[in-house]
Image 1 (tube, rainbow, N blue to C red):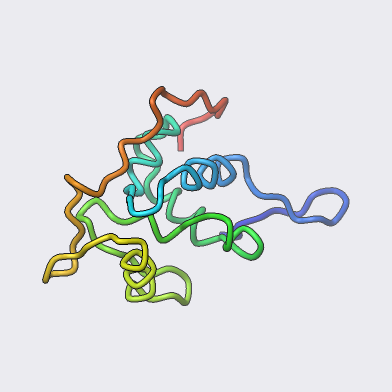
Image 2: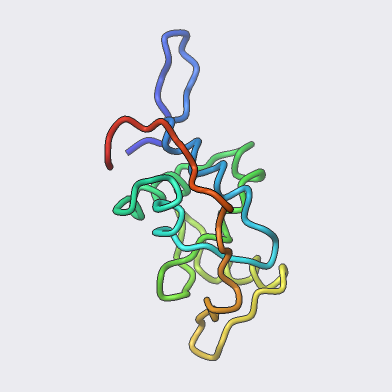
Length: 129
């Protein structure tokens, strides 16, 4: 599945859900992480964790450098690979931000998990993923 669509003028457009994912992920503070499922739940799509992963996998420059994709990890507290980037790259980026991993490669979610926005987001999405 492509991360963008052709518009009438021939320009590529980013799907609305993807744009919302990027907005949420950009709010995650340095040194904190969020899970794919948590991002989906914030957006009112509690079963949309895989769609969040697809949105992040579709990131291309210049958004790739603006959205801190490395701060999104799986529910087990582990890094995941992303289109040509290994989980080791993600871990390295997180460690540079001060995120600590245990010997088995997991983040302690009790201390590092971002709590999310203070209020529920109203996204205007018309259907459930």
